[in-house]
Image (cartoon, rainbow, N blue to C red; front, side):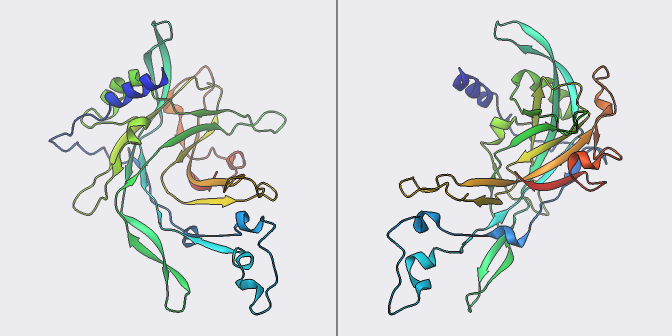
Length: 310
């Protein structure tokens, strides 16, 4: 059943290329988050636990330094990589009522939260470069097309009266029935891709002569109308990641990387709405942190977005 749904989503996927360039949006309608790079994202320093956990590799040589043994060289190994990051632009978060097919075949009017967005590949990368003395530096490089496999999580930042966070998070859902209504309202002269379709695309490099951004839309349903403070976490915009091997998680008989934990660099967009569950008005959704409530988002006051590892 799920395979059939996915095939249906992909079949109705990317509309044909337009011969006429879409009209630009009015100034101020689209918010753009530039790519974010940090030199230390190009290297990770870790022990190779698969080697150091073996009982047979540790020994004390007589004619060379212990640091030159396999056991010694498996300590504090530096793993280097190129890092890329996409530019992310989005229109205001909105709501729309759509007739959505139910399991019994009937249509049901459903409140959908959605966001129209674009990803742009500037081509910029951060690249580790080895010098003649073996010392690495990080240089700006020029990359090629990359794949954006999107992950959108809408997560409540509200707290209960006791001070604990309300554990509510919503993954985006592909809702084909919402496409026509959203496109007609937001971008009738340009194609929009849902999350499944977006993952099939290679994002080409844009330059001064051509903006090759790809536009998409993301949808959520069954959002608790009582949510006032929330964030949308956008994953897949960069290949930057961190990893950790917890003590004792790997045993000598385990397959490589057993127990290894990864966190990936993710864009956090903060929102708030001053209404309540009885006022489901999209115009009340505001980008940024609610005044005096920065602690809810664990960010400094005035921070509308940030990059986090999660």
